[in-house]
Image 1 (cartoon, chains in turn brown, red):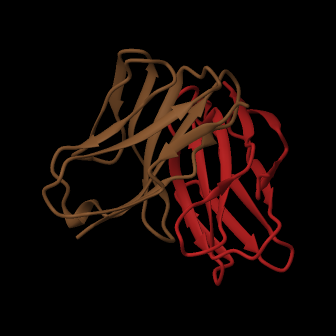
Image 2 (cartoon, rainbow over the protein chains, first blue to last red):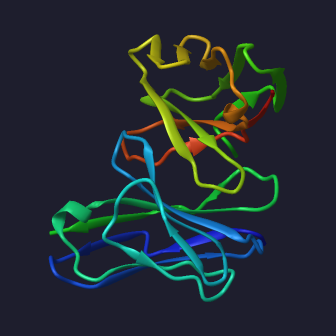
Length: 111
Length: 111
């Protein structure tokens, strides 16, 4: 079944740890995105990719990095987590002429 | 299923005209957001309106919210060719922070 998955759904981690948020989609979409959203606030684009080996920074500056080695996989990595990284991270993908499909999100808390 | 539904699905106007897009939703919300997506790029946040607000302005954009009718409208005045994009409304039904998106309205502004 076509879908977009994110793991983990919830993560509580200490300052300084390295973390990777996983995102996978089974729809064969070329374009994938990472957004950051604080509770009750708007989404902010932090990274996007137009296809394999293509990654770009979004509108909101982020200390995270991404990679796109396979079409279906778009992981986001924080080398050294800080409390300011506490937020919800949403992954999305789009196909040609389709609205964005969002994953369930990862709620990250850095203590 | 999507919470928000945009209407119309597609809109084509001449430069200088006003464009109005509507969004209806099903459940009570804390806020409603409007986003723009240029072809292939990520979502760009336009306006966030909270459930206790009725109208908000930002430049050539005017957003209204009618919680009794569970609907919102986005008005773009004096449209420009650069306004050509897809416009999405998203609702936040809780303060957990994850928004639910509609399918969008595709706006084409002809020069």
